[in-house]
Length: 162
Image (cartoon, rainbow, N blue to C red; front, side, top):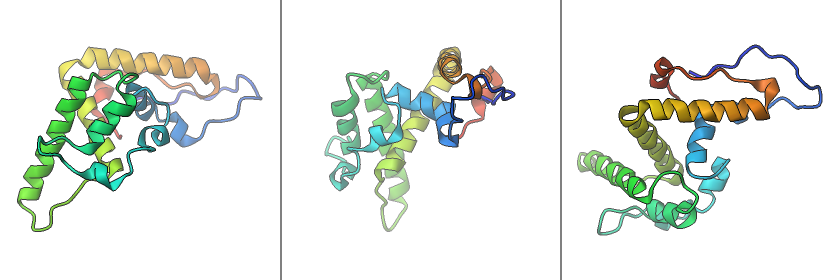
């Protein structure tokens, strides 16, 4: 897992980053959608109407993501559609056994989407995942020399917290 290296103050003027700003995996996942912060990604995802699933099994969340971020997202629209289908499929399997079906809120949907993307990369392109994460860490370390983080190793990839 990406670990913080020994802290050495490079410049006194650079303020220490807040904890949430150092969460590299989170930052990498957000960058896959072409955004730098969760607020930017979730701002237009909070409408209750987006919680609905249409007759074709597509969530309003998926449609909104493609509409708002499709042009800057590093994940193809086809892959996002597959992730959405997987999320809906699992949700339906769970709801089949429940008296009161649940509906995903925007933050739950986005968390599941992050997990879908990470696991897809982990199982289908592990080296690409490792390279992409380490490239992101290298950029982070260049921008924040007072808060450098160690590169991931392949054995780190199976230890995540999203």
